[in-house]
Length: 431
Ligand code: S3P
Image 1 (tube, protein in one colour):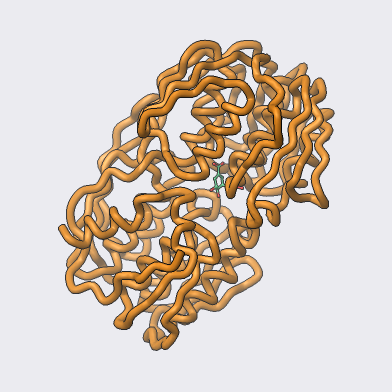
Image 2 (cartoon, rainbow, N blue to C red):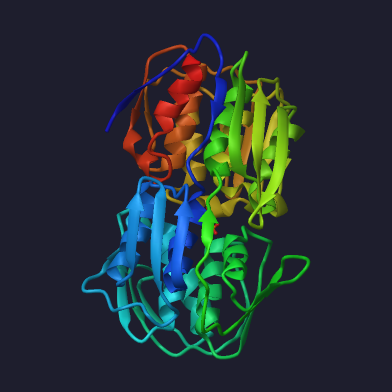
């Protein structure tokens, strides 16, 4: 679907917005709720394509799940209650569903085939199947990609050093560890988002995280107890409006009830370092920090990011590139090679698409060099999300800063994580 983008906005974004539920937490609520004993209630579930793929996959595994809008009830079947599906499970575009399920299915008593869309079928899966093999898992990939066949096997605990900083890989191993005999020990390369650990602990799993967040110990767990999960607003969705409000003069926006988990809030630190005007009011709810974020427009300074800072801002890096392309100097982003294997090669896409607008963005193997002092003097009129939700939404904001008509190709990709994105943007622009 092509979409005519709003360009050249006269006055900024205003008002309050409660963004949809967190994508990572919504996936995990369905997965962990399914393995639990009892009914898990999920409030503010994200009803985007990715999370609905997870929901459908667990229905296909025999779990009864009821949904009304963003309220979900998962009737858990217990650690050993999933049933063999009648067909291959459709993962759609969702890397999180695929990778976490590879670990979750590896120790079961039946075989499962996982398939996905074209983009997902190009993404690397050996990063999950290889460490799982150290626990005795038998997973056949197709040259390292989907389709993947998980041949359920009894698993044995292992001590595993991760080779990539990835919450998806870590979580797959944690799910396998719940079913393996003995104590599985996982050493992270860098600390990554810890929603699996937080939620599993709340459901009663035998799981400990070291004080430096680098080591996770998981014991075999026979029973998880159903809980109520209040999903906070997704920081990665709020991020779009935080960036738009910063860049568009005269803006003053408050995003309410946003998840502020330390492993996800890198953009807040980056905005402050760049000279952004950000106020955060924070409370703790069910083990996760949540709060309201007020952002006003500001003039920006450049930033330099390195590998240690990347995991907490991984999904927001296309937005950081946009901020840097309007800052008063040269920014560098290093250590972000993971961007090359996201829904698209996000390094190449950001360079190409912001380049069409005249922004001075140079791709590096592991990031970018961006000179924000270069005036945007592009002439292209057609931008492309390349089917990547976060690239599409970032370009929707970039267009607001441009003074000519622009069309976005494959705009419907935003439905993967934020189907109402353009409506919510309009509401804040019209307020
Ligand atoms: C996610 C982890 C991240 C992130 C993705 C969601 C998760 O991927 O980019 O959008 O829910 O665990 P990696 O862990 O592979 O970096």
